[in-house]
Length: 114
Length: 110
Image (cartoon, rainbow over the protein chains, first blue to last red):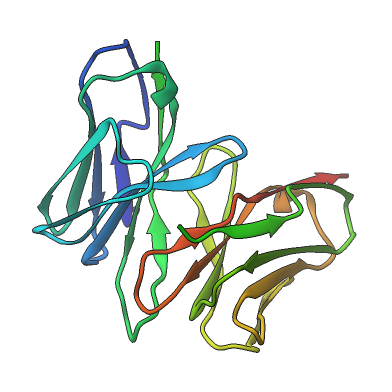
């Protein structure tokens, strides 16, 4: 079984709709992240969480919100989707050991906003 | 925020050729990571580097952590068609979140 899972894998929605992307992990990691990937721009950090009660904005958090319901779950919401939020979204987890961090990624959610 | 410059942006090479790509930063890192992303999948960790000057291999892949701690390179020897994908570098300092490069797209001609 995959250590980091994302649901749904693909989603088509309309402008103005609220949608939620889910991420679950079985690695027991404290840290979780949401990234967005657009062609030619690499991975850009949306939000991250270092623990259940910890939420931090990344470089492109506008238009998004997150919820860390439990250590294993981190969900990303688009309150009112717009077409330029069409992208590939990745969840990642990590555990800081001795000051070094390795992030493990989920398979991604492809979102199309019409 | 911190930026990583990753080059080249893309490469189109003949099967069997060696490949080299690198990342540079204006600030230092304690950790350099190299990921590969296959089409339609999430990035997968290839190599992790934790000490300046460290040279680490993983099969046909070799990566080095630059002495200045501001750069890293990844080499792939004798490329094969399944090497196709996007390669990302990432740097981290003192437990802070990772900073990613924009990626190098690798295409291989059979």
